[in-house]
Image 1 (tube, rainbow, N blue to C red):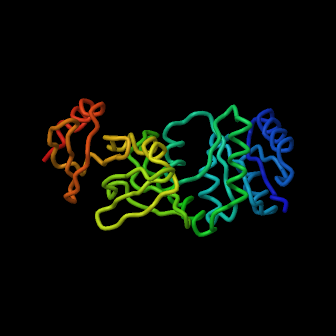
Image 2 (cartoon, rainbow, N blue to C red; image 1 turned 90 degrees about the vertical axis):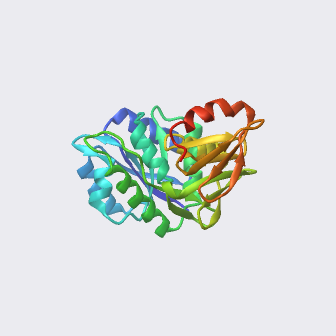
Length: 255
């Protein structure tokens, strides 16, 4: 089954390179058009109704996010393409959406396309886009602020949670368990991936098996590595090699 696709990219050379990689490595991705402007992208999406859009973030007279705002309902998959922009990428990650850094790596492209082939439910896709746009609206004067809501992939779809409500995460083979105050659920990402996502949001890896929200730490008891108590009464071990850095991170947070 063919996947009708549009490339939104203002640099012709970049668009041609991306199209060549797609056509050389796939048989089901059908590039129907290249849009060099946001206005043309809007027209083509309304006209062609693609299933997939490669969307450049920085465009003349606006951004790819402006296009999503204008379109409203999103009934296609998106792979963002961008040069490094820490805040935009963090927002995309928090929304569990795909992106490719320029210059685009061939293998990363093919991995992203494989995800499209096993696409999520449309309702989840729309929620993810709404979460992304909500996160981006939190920037003030172009400066990043702490993102508040996170889309976490589960075996059934996505779970949307407030970052502040996460007490800790526990490694579970190639998955991890996320603990809120009154419930627990399994995420289809390993703990290392979740750590990368949350490390700038007051989370700390105290042990190979545990990542905690420092805002929920209430007490630290010394020992070989020690124990840290969380606001729900749970206590977790701190590894010896992480102890010194953990105590420094925790300084000033204990109540």
